[in-house]
Amino acid sequence: MDFEKLTNDVINETDVIIKKFGPRFAGTKPSVDTADYLYNDAKNYSDEIHTDDFKISKGAFLGWINILVIAYLIGLVFLILKLEYVTLGLMIASLLIFYFQFIRYLPVIDFLFPRGKCRNVYGVIEPKDEVKQQIIISGHHDSAPIFNFFVYQPKLYNLRVTGSIAFVVLSLVLSAVNLFIDNEILHWVSVGVIGLGALLVGQMWFFRSMRKATPGAGDNLASTQIAFQMAKYYYSLKGTKNELKHTRIIFASFDAEEEGLRGARAFVKKHKEELLQTKTYLLNIECLYDENELFFLTSDINNSVKLSDNLADKLVDIASDLGVKTHKQPIAVLTGGTDAGEFGKIGVEATTIMGMPWTNDSRSAVYHTPKDTVDKVSKKAVAITANIFHNFIIEKDKE
Image (cartoon, rainbow, N blue to C red; front, side, top):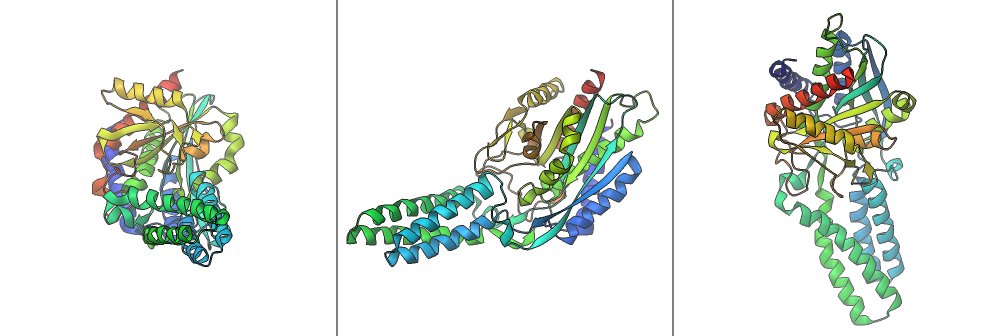
């Protein structure tokens, strides 16, 4: 495989798609049109090419933020009126929504939001002989809403987000205390503290833009292009001595990753039987901004889903043999998730390779901002990722 050519093709094609379709909110026409573009292109280098349509509730994944702000401010009013039980109920409800909607990625408030059509696209390249395993290489083509907190004063991100959640918890505690202790001084001190917290919690309303999405080059169109350009190479081997003998390649681009992994979830739900009938590996790719920060995930979805330690170890070893330093690590709570999590839920051996630090105070400066343009994607990280995955595929095919 010519990794320099592959990298240039990845960068060039990513640029072409962004210029053609622009930002790509899940559930909107640009994202669906991007899937169609990928579908039409992949017809030329696949044995099968498919699209799967599904519906999402647009904006619902981060909708818990708006609910939390509204509940907090209304709760403050009821606390002033000495209706502490209402405040307590609102805080409990908002924290439960936060836990299930964001920490666990479950669609508990999706019914409140408008629906939109999304489209996954995936291709299949069959091996020469009997299929002994299938390897999925994946990215996603939707782009994220702009996170205003990453654009303006990003160093205060943790304070603003975790501080706001902490004040909601404090409001719950103080309303419970006031419910059982009737003391005028305690009441007004509690009102003062929670009122002060309103200044912090209130600004969460502006956490992200609800109208503008990022260009989404590094997150995550370049990753999709790695999957598709690698597929093009494997398809070109058909009829040669280097054709894959026992390994089916599935290359996929999921929609709605930025809406709580809804695209990967729809794919897993529809194809669960095929994923479990044949030994399957998922090699997912995210955010290749820095070749010096490459690592493989061993858990996902706020550390609530286990990924494959063995797969991560194998890929780290391959990287080491190539002279590349990588490592494995679990995903941290409150940092989100990747599409690999949906595959991990059903027991598929899965991991995601990341190309930036994955903590809220040290992510790439362009992550979820208007600066996520093609020039910010690390060409070295693209080449290294393709090289690691290629060596893994060749080794598996020889087993």
